[in-house]
Image 1 (cartoon, helix red, strand yellow):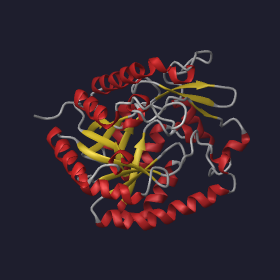
Image 2 (cartoon, helix red, strand yellow):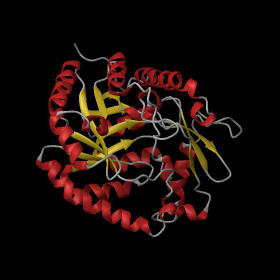
Image 3 (tube, one colour):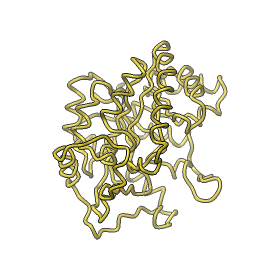
Length: 333
């Protein structure tokens, strides 16, 4: 059901997208070439590519990359963000050049479900997103593409569906499987609501550590945490013969979702006690003990351990997903 491969966001230090100082990147990172090499190692069938890498390439360079990916049997997905990763026009250029049918689109920089940080501007942000989707959705449809908007720790399932209906047939969803917890929704409830609109999947997992303010979402190998992947895949499989998907361990910084603070709920629609209880119950699976050290090497300042940390985790994630029987990672001969 899933054409599984990689995106760069679980490998940000290794690839050079994250570092310390200014600019905040790792100049010794492996970049696009290292990314493709790792994808080949794992037998990736999908490659979600960071559009700023592509924006720097000439038309001939993009044509050569398309030929290369075709030869490797990898389906390209272009990864962009609304007002976050350069102009959306660039993502359309990249998609046309690579023959990509899907443009993954992050909508906001919100993390940890913290809408309250936006205050009165939260409504303005929503309005600007609706306007952008009304503009770009029809264009994507006309080109035979889809803008797959991601649940980037910002929007709930019903809100994503409403955005899809606003943007029309050219708008679908990139479903980040770990990002239901930051908006206080249970993974399977979230999946049931969005399943008809899903066009691309980010396979992410978290171990949950409960705190005095809510819970902390801690990066782990995909399959070692709280996300019920078999049940989730079954729900998607009822509606889709095949979807592109990528392995994406969480960020190098833990996400603290402070739902026990009253202000955290500002901007959220009403939720029943039963719905929230389902989220809390799901978060108990493989729960991280309250006194465990949740920190990654990045959070401990141990940059020398980061490359092996990221690579070991992505390889374990691939092995876990294969063992679960949800997909194969070998390219067909």
